[in-house]
Image (cartoon, rainbow, N blue to C red; front, side, top):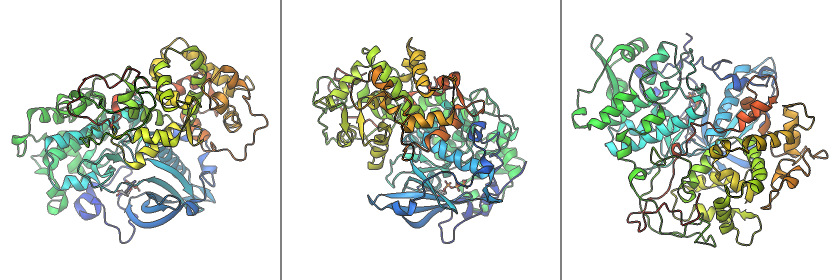
Length: 635
Ligand SMILES: Nc1ncnc2c1ncn2[C@@H]1O[C@H](COP(=O)(O)OP(=O)(O)OP(=O)(O)O)[C@@H](O)[C@H]1O
């Protein structure tokens, strides 16, 4: 095993991260970073790209025109993170500046895969409100610049160091971490680096949302698959990772270590022989532990539930932590199962509370008509939690789950979103019943029947006082809606973003619709889609014609100009879509997407449940009706 220290490249003058404050932890933080091999970075990331032959990533080059770079605010082994300001809007963002690694005039292969992998994962998972949002990637001859949502609340680690959390606060944070893990696992991604340093608070507020950053060790691993390369940070690494045979459960273990820390302020294991009991204090300078000692404690040490403050912590909390820190991964709960633990559920407002029903919710499409967004001025506590643990995604009223649906759709990636928008256009005429409530909700925002809702109306909807969202989160949800990047939300975008795709997949028509979209791309009737096919159709507007901006979305509209033979390919806003989609969809790496691969690409994993995404639905006390907030026209 090749070990690489995880403390290099600190920019001068930066507030040091935890690793720098403690020589002990610095040693302990030596991280097994050989993960970015073709196997470990995921064969998908390798995909059809001959990485070693690249001179550039194909990212935009106009960073300096768009942003003013400010001071450095953080540093890791891979890059330095700076503050920056959007010149047009004044919005502050975080920019990770990564120095390019070049060999023989070309970008070094592993480096290319690492960057592409990070961008791909951010582009998918960053659409969830649990992960810092990636606005885009830029490059110069020397650097790559990843522009991200700025999190000003500091690392979870900083708050952990201040001492233990009360149970309600600890449970809320554990829920957010496990939701992030569950979202990743549902997409066949294992994080391998769940630790407090990789979660930042959006703001300094006590109840600010937590956002995951840094997917450097994440890799593709479906349930049941096993990995063998050691990867992780020693204090959080699962025993089976040390034994080099592990899969998704390793993230649940790491979440268990974090849960233990949140409740007690220290690490969970002791080893009588070497007197190892890790506490924040130990870590900050009193004792010296080698990785060997730490690994021994993880593998064989006793779980310490005896010492204070465990005598003041509830049985349920202890049971929760003990379950997550089960050494046998086969007996450990999955992230989804852990989210249903009674300790988390007892603090989950959405599991017991009532949802906002009092104001003029604009998405019900029924009784409220007009769709005028209102502010209820209630100012009540908001719930960031999911849909109440066991609540199924299917059948959840739109007025409760709008934000969850948007996030999940956002994580699909651009090509899949565009293709699903085309599927919708085929469905719209055939499945009027399935889309009736969504159509009604759209009409309430588009009373004039133009088939397009301007950005302002959607912003007003998301700011109507019923959702707990920051300004930047509203704009990122808006970006998810606007699949064709036209600056508004058309009827088919609305349907595509909000429909329950898992339900559609189970319907008789699904295979037919997907075939129709495949055929739109496959103009040569070869049965395979090449990057060129896809690029031509996307940039020629053939797929976007699939809905037009109207609400009819008929088959005739779709097929009117399927290939865009006269297409102007020079100014295509989807240039970066195809390589990322190829890395995801081309499972056998033959440089094309077969019909079967396309069907799998468009399908939503059965495990990708709505309740893993934060509802952000405000919970209003004393709801009169106790109804589902549907107002008569929700899903
Ligand atoms: N979106 C953000 N907003 C504010 N600060 C950030 C953001 N992203 C990163 N940082 C800060 O920059 C530091 C380094 O970021 P990050 O961990 O992503 O870099 P890295 O080089 O990939 O790290 P690693 O060494 O773990 O690979 C973080 O610890 C954090 O303090």
